[in-house]
Amino acid sequence: MTAPGVDDAIREARPVSERRLHPVTPLRRAWAPVAVLIGWAVHDPDQAQRQLTRLTTTTLLIALAVLVPAAALYGFLTWWYTHFAVTDSELRIRTGLVFRRTAHIRLERIQAIDVTQPLLARVAGVAKLKLDVVGTDKKDELAFLGAEEARSLRAELLARAAGFAPETAHEVGEAPSRELLRVPPRVLAVSLVLTGATWGTLAAALVVPAVLWLFTESVWTVLATAVPLVGAAGAASVGRFVTEYDWTVGESPDGLRLDHGLLDRAHETVPPGRVQTVRLVEPLLWRRRGWVRVELDVAGSSNSVLLPVAPREIAESVVARVLPGVTVPPPGALTRPPRRAGRCVPLWWRGHGLAVTDAVFAARAGLLSRTLALVPHAKVQSVRLTQGPWERRWNVADVHVDTGAGKTVTARLRDAGEAAQLLRTQAERSRTGRRDARPDRWMA
Image 1 (cartoon, rainbow, N blue to C red):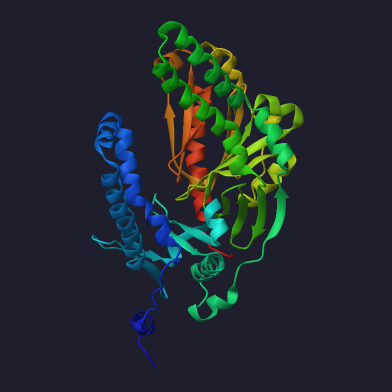
Image 2: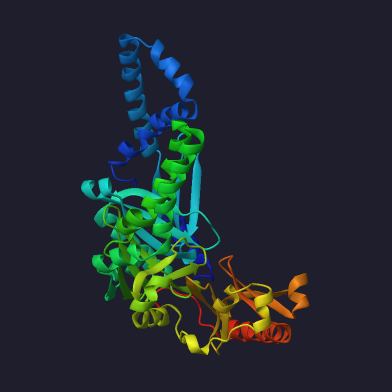
């Protein structure tokens, strides 16, 4: 018979087998010295040009003969001194060529593990593992692993995070997934065409450089303005299409699975119980088709999109899986601010609305592009009431609800008496919701 805690100590004392990343990793890391030189050249192009003009052919060849092996050696050494190991209680990642760093990631604090494959990684048959951990803003990652090894390691880590014994974690394997929705490429393309931000950035990219040329006749000024605007227009249209191509939502015991990407393929997981806010975004030109975009705020995770575009009925059914027990209030159930709120915000006050149900705090904002934010009562961290001098004059106030993801949802321009009452009742709903909430657990 052993004393409590002795078994855990014995398991921790067992020798741990450390593993290295995929042998293709040095090729990725060898670019670091080259990137430093490119960054210096971009930062000071005049000095870089002067230095290049001084180089002879022989000097340039000698420099390349030194730089290429040095970059290759750097990539090899950083790969050689990077190890990871999975123990009974944590994932350890040791990195660093000169300054050593060891990350100890407790398995029970892992809440999402994403597998991403950039285009070249897909060609090489490798993948990157990104870990969302409670209490950290930056994702730890293992780049790169073999594609099959990455999926196997992900399944093992999730199984251990769910409480399975180390001896059986390997047998659990990848949790089965059932496809809920796939966004057709044609629908995605049409939705981007009907998005006002796409046309706005494109118009700015065409008009602003032309106006600057008329006033300055400076090519450099026009280029310095046009390039960022064209890049923004491309990111709002082509960039989003490439990123959100073949968007697939699947349901599994460890959360909702998101697979997407035309060039870089990403496999993400929306962890159960960690979603703080769900937003249904409805641009003006989408309303006739009944389409919405669903965005998320997840505590400790950078995953922010659940559905790039979908019919409202289907989107609401997916939201019900992310927030069990929550029903999206219909537009008619949201009450507008009083008419005197138009004295504070002319015309746009009509876009605001509020509905509070037994499960959720729902606030709507926006007139052209509407956004309905849903916050479960259990996820509310604090409630605040604010009232500026002009709002006091017209007896209205704003009620702010803060969530665990560091975001705020605001019910704007409510009647002052209603806002005060809402402040009191929401605090009680949040307390009751946290008491009755189910624990956040993998594979529950």
